[in-house]
Image 1 (cartoon, helix red, strand yellow):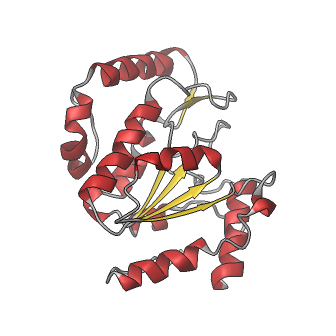
Image 2: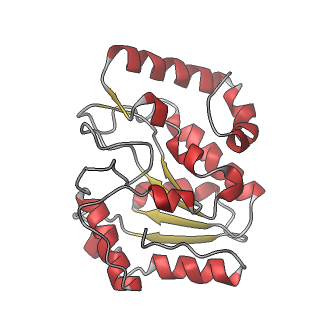
Image 3: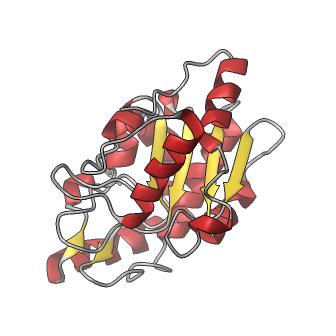
Length: 223
């Protein structure tokens, strides 16, 4: 199928794009966009992949599904569009950055595109959602697709850092080869769970220490 996605990802995922499962998922998503209000905008469904080519991935952060309120989602997990106040989970991510690396982020800005451009793949498990209906596109096939994405990264690359926050993300980690990648797990940064192990996890400094150890450029989390 002629999926419009960054070329290095297209090459890696082409076999999956030819499966019956992908056909069923794409038919469902197309119908949803034609008949419902769905986020993100169609041009941003693959924003994480277009912003972070397969060849450039160094770090992977896995979210659940896109924000479901208007104007927020733009295809990068935890990130919101310019002009939108960061949601509570993202504010807690900023708080941990401050505690871990003394990086003070602007709490009025939540666009994480600069992280993506440095090699941080900000991927949700489910890439689309109906307006005001969290989880509405779960169990439609996106989870299998993103499992394949993680599997390809695990198999074809070395010395990546996977940040798995919350039980949902941890379940996605079952396909990662932990003998050649660093997998860091913590509670979800949501206000309901951040105090149960997200705050104090120091994942950002651990990530950069690992990248430096393996002769990779560190992530400048300030931007």
